[in-house]
Length: 205
Image (cartoon, rainbow, N blue to C red; front, side, top):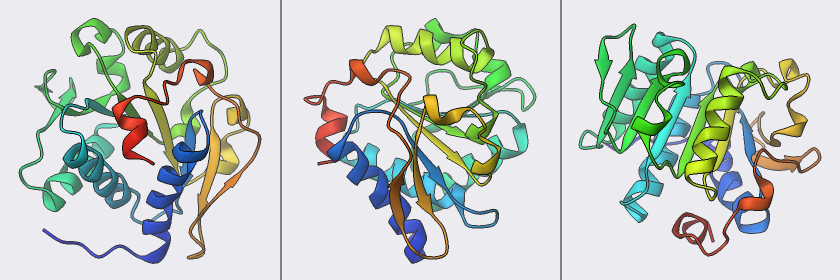
């Protein structure tokens, strides 16, 4: 199914590609409430996986309503998407899906069942605390040990609540129809481990 993106939505996606072409680190996509964040994620994921079918993509959030919403948006856009859900609250455990939508409380102890993951998208990324001894941080750290080239992309509508997130993400703004631009200081969870020769990086060139 073909869905037409608004200019700021396509700008957000292009901002991700531009970011990885120019830099290492973890971009943060900021899209206002009701701005179609789920569609942006779905379109980006479809593009990556169609270009590189061997990539493993994990989309993580904290509430089951968002898990369902994001999964449904991808299936509406791409009905044949190899996508599944891992959520105790939704009573689904499709741990082997190439595109896996998961709740952090359900998935955080299953790193070695997830195995290698190439790309992690975190919806509502403003909920990631600064402390390394937290569920999100431990989970990302353990995934990163399995694949040091793993990339993390955050998405949020409320970047003003990211009081201490600048140590983890570089902001990509997608507001007021202006497209995505880089802002903030570049820092990263795993900046020194990015392999620019990896297939996913090449797909963003």
